[in-house]
Image (tube, rainbow, N blue to C red; front, side, top):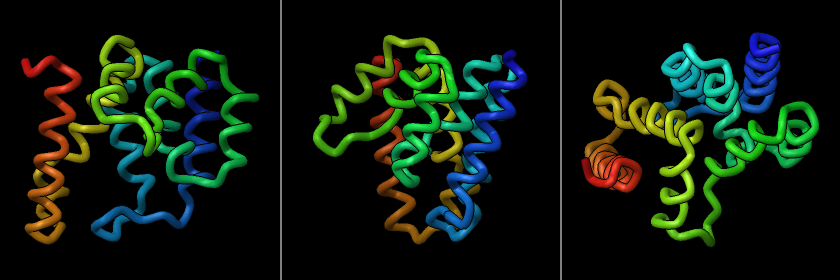
Length: 145
């Protein structure tokens, strides 16, 4: 069941992110795959990692697909990881901080986004803005530890 769930999440992520590129012009699915690989020792975390940006960055019909095709706790984790512009950063990170599954995936997401090799591909102003953003996010998730 777990391997099947990961396979289905991976396939959905590939369909949902097809044609998308990141800020450096690389295929966006590469980021998602790295986040999934970082948590691949846990099938539930890996499935969530494959899906972590689908609701936020892809067509709306994928929300329904995640809801219908995955267990409630997977949908809930993906939904929790989805940014909502009306939710303050503090509240967003608070909801993630106290859930082990979402926190693990978000920490892997931040680690990949903050990777200096990736940031070096961006213009200095953007890279510095993102360094500050990810440092703040990491502090919010770890209590500044």
